[in-house]
Image (cartoon, rainbow, N blue to C red):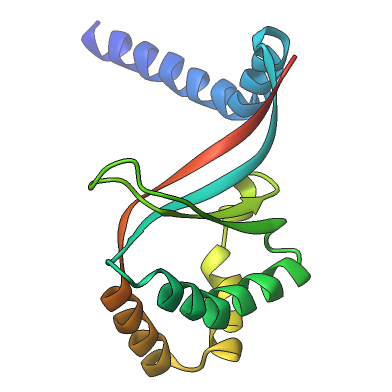
Amino acid sequence: MNKLFLVSILTFALAGLCTAQTSSPAATTTTTTSIMAPYTEGPVWELTMVRTKPGMDDDYLKNLAQAYKSTSEEAKKQGIIMDYKIMLGDAANKDDYNILLMVEYKNMAAFDGLRQKTDPIAQKMIGGEEQLRQGSVKRGELREILGSKTMREVTLK
């Protein structure tokens, strides 16, 4: 009797698993969300909050003009990113950022295999691993990264 009960439970569990695999939860969620949500989903933004060290704003921006701009322009040209922006302002307090780096992607799927797409660009525009490391060390002398976020742009209905 115990064996029959165990086989029945396993059969129902397997049937449930197979059913779950044939219906896409993402499609169901998107359909439900699009009907009920007060917004439509737009592109995805990767935000990096940076605080430059005192007096280093211009030096950091010059560094960005060399490496960040060239690699971002190439990624944009290849369709890997949609756009990028650099926002400069005053920090609200001693713990706040004064530069915001923003990269726009078409959607969350754009992050799939991103390194395989962007590493060749970095090598072409900046150089090999040693040049990349040296650039990272130099930027570390100019700024501190306070954090990063990935956020979706939404348009209210």
